Length: 259
Figure 1 (cartoon, rainbow, N blue to C red):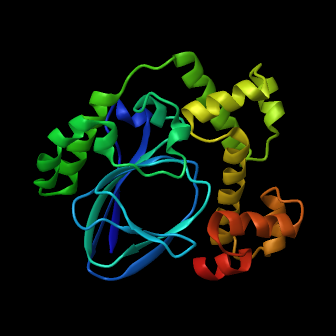
Figure 2: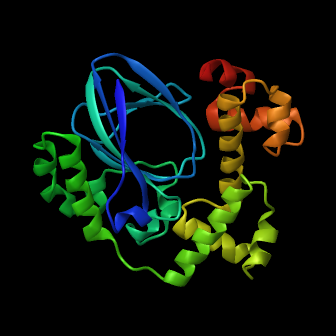
Protein backbone atom coordinates (compact mmCIF):
# COMPACT_ATOMS: atom_id res chain seq x y z
CA UNK A 1 0.00 0.00 0.00
CA UNK A 2 1.33 3.44 -0.87
CA UNK A 3 0.06 6.93 -0.13
CA UNK A 4 1.14 10.20 -1.71
CA UNK A 5 0.24 13.81 -0.87
CA UNK A 6 -0.41 16.54 -3.44
CA UNK A 7 -0.80 20.29 -2.98
CA UNK A 8 -3.97 21.95 -4.27
CA UNK A 9 -3.84 24.69 -6.89
CA UNK A 10 -5.16 28.21 -6.44
CA UNK A 11 -7.74 29.28 -5.36
CA UNK A 12 -8.48 25.95 -3.66
CA UNK A 13 -5.30 26.13 -1.56
CA UNK A 14 -7.18 28.46 0.80
CA UNK A 15 -9.69 25.68 1.54
CA UNK A 16 -7.88 22.36 0.99
CA UNK A 17 -4.97 21.18 3.14
CA UNK A 18 -3.90 18.60 0.60
CA UNK A 19 -5.01 15.81 -1.68
CA UNK A 20 -3.95 12.28 -0.80
CA UNK A 21 -3.90 9.29 -3.09
CA UNK A 22 -3.76 5.74 -1.77
CA UNK A 23 -3.42 2.56 -3.78
CA UNK A 24 -3.19 -1.10 -2.77
CA UNK A 25 -2.71 -4.30 -4.72
CA UNK A 26 -5.06 -6.63 -2.93
CA UNK A 27 -3.58 -7.01 0.55
CA UNK A 28 -5.95 -6.95 3.51
CA UNK A 29 -5.50 -3.87 5.63
CA UNK A 30 -7.28 -2.41 8.66
CA UNK A 31 -6.86 1.11 9.97
CA UNK A 32 -8.37 2.88 12.96
CA UNK A 33 -10.19 6.06 11.92
CA UNK A 34 -10.86 8.53 14.72
CA UNK A 35 -12.27 12.08 14.77
CA UNK A 36 -9.86 14.77 13.60
CA UNK A 37 -12.14 17.80 13.28
CA UNK A 38 -11.73 17.85 9.49
CA UNK A 39 -14.02 17.13 6.55
CA UNK A 40 -12.93 14.79 3.78
CA UNK A 41 -14.16 13.95 0.31
CA UNK A 42 -13.30 10.50 -1.05
CA UNK A 43 -13.24 9.57 -4.73
CA UNK A 44 -12.73 5.83 -5.18
CA UNK A 45 -11.61 4.72 -8.63
CA UNK A 46 -11.29 1.06 -7.66
CA UNK A 47 -13.00 -1.06 -4.95
CA UNK A 48 -14.27 1.22 -2.13
CA UNK A 49 -13.25 0.75 1.49
CA UNK A 50 -15.47 -0.98 4.06
CA UNK A 51 -16.28 0.70 7.39
CA UNK A 52 -16.37 -1.63 10.41
CA UNK A 53 -18.09 -0.06 13.42
CA UNK A 54 -17.74 -0.78 17.12
CA UNK A 55 -20.81 -3.02 17.13
CA UNK A 56 -19.32 -5.14 14.32
CA UNK A 57 -21.51 -3.71 11.56
CA UNK A 58 -19.76 -3.62 8.17
CA UNK A 59 -20.86 -1.03 5.64
CA UNK A 60 -19.12 -0.53 2.28
CA UNK A 61 -18.36 3.08 1.51
CA UNK A 62 -20.01 4.86 -1.39
CA UNK A 63 -17.79 5.23 -4.43
CA UNK A 64 -17.79 9.03 -4.16
CA UNK A 65 -18.65 10.43 -0.77
CA UNK A 66 -18.58 13.32 1.67
CA UNK A 67 -17.18 12.33 5.06
CA UNK A 68 -18.53 14.73 7.69
CA UNK A 69 -17.44 15.43 11.22
CA UNK A 70 -17.12 12.37 13.46
CA UNK A 71 -17.84 12.05 17.15
CA UNK A 72 -16.74 8.41 17.38
CA UNK A 73 -14.40 5.95 15.71
CA UNK A 74 -14.52 3.12 13.21
CA UNK A 75 -12.11 0.79 11.46
CA UNK A 76 -11.60 0.91 7.71
CA UNK A 77 -10.94 -2.41 6.00
CA UNK A 78 -9.64 -3.13 2.53
CA UNK A 79 -9.81 -6.60 1.03
CA UNK A 80 -9.19 -6.14 -2.69
CA UNK A 81 -7.41 -3.78 -5.03
CA UNK A 82 -8.35 -0.23 -4.26
CA UNK A 83 -7.43 3.28 -5.29
CA UNK A 84 -8.79 6.52 -3.89
CA UNK A 85 -8.26 10.26 -4.13
CA UNK A 86 -8.92 11.96 -0.79
CA UNK A 87 -9.52 15.67 -0.25
CA UNK A 88 -8.55 16.92 3.20
CA UNK A 89 -10.41 20.17 3.84
CA UNK A 90 -9.53 22.71 6.49
CA UNK A 91 -12.10 22.49 9.32
CA UNK A 92 -13.61 25.88 8.42
CA UNK A 93 -13.65 25.23 4.67
CA UNK A 94 -16.40 22.70 3.90
CA UNK A 95 -19.05 25.38 4.29
CA UNK A 96 -17.62 27.09 1.21
CA UNK A 97 -18.67 24.08 -0.88
CA UNK A 98 -21.82 22.92 0.93
CA UNK A 99 -23.95 25.98 1.75
CA UNK A 100 -26.22 24.45 4.37
CA UNK A 101 -25.70 23.53 8.05
CA UNK A 102 -22.78 21.11 8.17
CA UNK A 103 -24.19 19.54 11.33
CA UNK A 104 -26.36 17.55 8.89
CA UNK A 105 -23.18 15.64 7.98
CA UNK A 106 -22.33 14.67 11.58
CA UNK A 107 -21.35 10.96 11.58
CA UNK A 108 -22.65 10.71 8.01
CA UNK A 109 -20.93 9.86 4.73
CA UNK A 110 -23.47 10.50 1.95
CA UNK A 111 -22.93 9.83 -1.73
CA UNK A 112 -21.62 12.98 -3.41
CA UNK A 113 -24.08 12.78 -6.31
CA UNK A 114 -26.98 12.78 -3.81
CA UNK A 115 -25.89 16.32 -2.92
CA UNK A 116 -24.63 17.48 -6.30
CA UNK A 117 -26.18 15.50 -9.14
CA UNK A 118 -23.88 17.18 -11.66
CA UNK A 119 -20.94 15.20 -10.27
CA UNK A 120 -22.33 12.44 -12.51
CA UNK A 121 -21.08 14.45 -15.50
CA UNK A 122 -17.50 14.08 -14.23
CA UNK A 123 -17.51 10.39 -13.27
CA UNK A 124 -16.46 8.70 -16.51
CA UNK A 125 -13.78 11.28 -17.18
CA UNK A 126 -12.48 10.72 -13.64
CA UNK A 127 -12.49 6.93 -13.97
CA UNK A 128 -10.75 7.11 -17.35
CA UNK A 129 -7.79 9.10 -16.00
CA UNK A 130 -4.39 7.43 -16.26
CA UNK A 131 -2.69 8.94 -13.20
CA UNK A 132 -3.22 10.77 -9.92
CA UNK A 133 -2.52 14.24 -11.30
CA UNK A 134 -5.25 13.85 -13.93
CA UNK A 135 -7.74 12.61 -11.36
CA UNK A 136 -6.95 15.53 -9.05
CA UNK A 137 -7.45 17.98 -11.92
CA UNK A 138 -10.95 16.57 -12.47
CA UNK A 139 -11.79 16.86 -8.77
CA UNK A 140 -10.41 20.41 -8.65
CA UNK A 141 -12.49 21.39 -11.66
CA UNK A 142 -15.61 20.09 -9.92
CA UNK A 143 -14.79 21.80 -6.60
CA UNK A 144 -14.02 25.10 -8.29
CA UNK A 145 -17.49 25.00 -9.79
CA UNK A 146 -18.97 24.62 -6.29
CA UNK A 147 -16.92 27.25 -4.51
CA UNK A 148 -19.13 30.14 -3.52
CA UNK A 149 -18.75 33.35 -1.55
CA UNK A 150 -20.39 32.89 1.82
CA UNK A 151 -20.87 35.60 4.45
CA UNK A 152 -17.20 36.49 4.71
CA UNK A 153 -17.57 38.06 8.14
CA UNK A 154 -18.89 34.86 9.73
CA UNK A 155 -16.53 32.74 7.63
CA UNK A 156 -13.44 34.62 8.84
CA UNK A 157 -14.78 34.75 12.37
CA UNK A 158 -15.10 30.96 12.55
CA UNK A 159 -11.70 30.57 10.93
CA UNK A 160 -10.14 32.84 13.58
CA UNK A 161 -11.84 30.89 16.38
CA UNK A 162 -10.48 27.61 15.02
CA UNK A 163 -6.97 29.06 14.79
CA UNK A 164 -7.15 30.16 18.42
CA UNK A 165 -8.41 26.75 19.51
CA UNK A 166 -5.68 24.99 17.55
CA UNK A 167 -3.00 27.17 19.16
CA UNK A 168 -4.15 25.94 22.55
CA UNK A 169 -4.70 22.35 21.38
CA UNK A 170 -8.30 22.63 22.49
CA UNK A 171 -7.38 23.81 25.98
CA UNK A 172 -9.43 26.98 25.90
CA UNK A 173 -12.68 27.72 27.70
CA UNK A 174 -15.55 28.22 25.27
CA UNK A 175 -16.94 31.19 27.18
CA UNK A 176 -13.54 32.88 27.01
CA UNK A 177 -13.42 32.28 23.27
CA UNK A 178 -16.86 33.86 22.93
CA UNK A 179 -15.82 36.87 24.97
CA UNK A 180 -12.72 37.30 22.82
CA UNK A 181 -14.92 37.65 19.72
CA UNK A 182 -17.83 39.37 21.44
CA UNK A 183 -20.14 36.40 20.98
CA UNK A 184 -22.44 34.60 23.37
CA UNK A 185 -21.84 30.88 23.83
CA UNK A 186 -25.16 30.28 22.10
CA UNK A 187 -24.16 32.36 19.05
CA UNK A 188 -20.79 30.63 18.90
CA UNK A 189 -22.45 27.22 19.02
CA UNK A 190 -24.84 28.21 16.22
CA UNK A 191 -21.96 29.31 14.00
CA UNK A 192 -19.95 26.15 14.70
CA UNK A 193 -22.86 23.82 14.01
CA UNK A 194 -23.54 25.65 10.75
CA UNK A 195 -20.01 26.13 9.43
CA UNK A 196 -17.91 23.46 11.17
CA UNK A 197 -20.52 20.77 11.68
CA UNK A 198 -19.99 20.23 15.38
CA UNK A 199 -20.27 22.24 18.59
CA UNK A 200 -17.27 24.26 19.84
CA UNK A 201 -17.13 22.12 22.99
CA UNK A 202 -16.99 18.88 21.00
CA UNK A 203 -14.46 20.34 18.58
CA UNK A 204 -12.29 21.36 21.54
CA UNK A 205 -12.46 17.83 22.95
CA UNK A 206 -11.41 16.38 19.59
CA UNK A 207 -8.44 18.77 19.42
CA UNK A 208 -7.34 17.66 22.90
CA UNK A 209 -7.59 14.01 21.94
CA UNK A 210 -5.65 14.55 18.71
CA UNK A 211 -2.92 16.38 20.59
CA UNK A 212 -2.70 13.43 22.97
CA UNK A 213 -2.47 11.07 19.99
CA UNK A 214 0.37 13.13 18.50
CA UNK A 215 2.24 12.96 21.80
CA UNK A 216 1.67 9.22 22.12
CA UNK A 217 3.13 8.75 18.64
CA UNK A 218 6.09 11.10 18.97
CA UNK A 219 7.02 11.42 22.64
CA UNK A 220 7.74 7.82 23.52
CA UNK A 221 9.93 8.89 26.47
CA UNK A 222 6.93 10.47 28.24
CA UNK A 223 4.70 8.45 30.51
CA UNK A 224 1.01 8.25 29.68
CA UNK A 225 0.26 10.21 32.85
CA UNK A 226 2.51 13.02 31.61
CA UNK A 227 0.88 12.94 28.19
CA UNK A 228 -2.58 13.13 29.72
CA UNK A 229 -1.57 16.13 31.81
CA UNK A 230 0.10 17.94 28.89
CA UNK A 231 -3.00 17.35 26.78
CA UNK A 232 -5.25 19.04 29.33
CA UNK A 233 -6.72 16.02 31.11
CA UNK A 234 -6.69 16.73 34.80
CA UNK A 235 -6.76 13.12 35.87
CA UNK A 236 -6.10 9.74 34.30
CA UNK A 237 -9.73 8.65 34.34
CA UNK A 238 -10.77 11.53 32.06
CA UNK A 239 -7.87 10.71 29.72
CA UNK A 240 -8.89 7.07 29.53
CA UNK A 241 -12.55 7.97 28.99
CA UNK A 242 -11.68 10.32 26.13
CA UNK A 243 -9.44 7.75 24.44
CA UNK A 244 -12.14 5.09 24.65
CA UNK A 245 -14.77 7.49 23.30
CA UNK A 246 -12.78 8.61 20.28
CA UNK A 247 -10.72 5.52 19.50
CA UNK A 248 -12.21 2.57 21.38
CA UNK A 249 -8.79 2.05 23.00
CA UNK A 250 -7.14 2.83 26.30
CA UNK A 251 -4.05 5.10 26.24
CA UNK A 252 -1.78 2.08 26.82
CA UNK A 253 -3.46 0.19 23.95
CA UNK A 254 -3.03 3.22 21.69
CA UNK A 255 0.67 3.37 22.51
CA UNK A 256 1.07 -0.30 21.55
CA UNK A 257 -0.98 0.27 18.38
CA UNK A 258 1.15 3.27 17.36
CA UNK A 259 4.34 1.30 18.01
